[in-house]
Image (cartoon, helix red, strand yellow):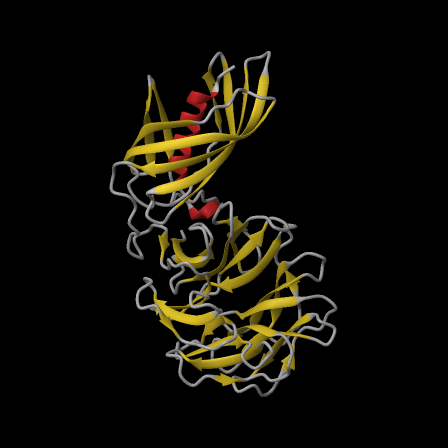
Length: 425
């Protein structure tokens, strides 16, 4: 039986919509405006990846047309059929059934990734077909290239759309937003090894701040934006360093020849909290003055504690820990007392960052070893845990802008790690 020409047309076109479509938000994140106008003609090629039992799958190349109105999409060019879809941001998921070749085709999952200019994408899906007597299922892979239309240009920051603000062949990650909202500091290995970079919040004026033969990472602004704390391996060990926000005045502030990292400033700028490995190889949370003095150990476990950050009111520290056997988000008082577990999802939850008003936490959640990671937001007390992104890849290291209306984060949705900004609420 040869069922698949119409099926491929259907799925490929939907994946095209997916590619330049929505971010598939859940909960309070709401519907995100489209990344751009997807109207135009597309050349789509497809082939089966698997089919059990064999359904006489075919490889096809065809042309279809997309008409877009806001978040609504219509696909034409399928003979007498037209298909409706919707987009939210830059990704869409699809599930449903429709009659075909005397049977019923059911789409269980559909995902895609698109280039940053929205002129090409690759995608895949899972499908099944049955006519009541014979049934089969499998997966398909697709590639689509724009023939007509304007493509997707990134809208300006603050426009309410998902925006990619770094695009290079390297890996850009671990963004941190300045308290005044004008700057973002981040890691990049675009010059070879990992270094610290800074840019305007719209992605312009990207400037390298460190330039050594070793790696630097996890930068974090001081509350007044004049200094940056980070880790560096330039001494032969991973130690905590600080510098002025223009890259000058780089100085080492720990010197214990251990694995140190994840440093963050207190809201009044008088303390730095960080992760340090102990002699057994486990990680604990420590606090010190900005010059490296007055070291104080806050946690002491035979497990790993990391990713600490002060609350904006300076009374608590949020961190990740696997003390229950799984990495979860925890909160403790600033002196290390009264640790409280906030997440219990069974996923790997880590890298929590406060909103500047102290009411929300954005964090990354991994769906198992080697699985996808997405952004989640919860209240400070752990209630109202809401998934913000649904991406088949890696979204993580989120940080709120000053008024809590946007989140900057790292994502592989462009193929490698880049920095993106998305609206929140």
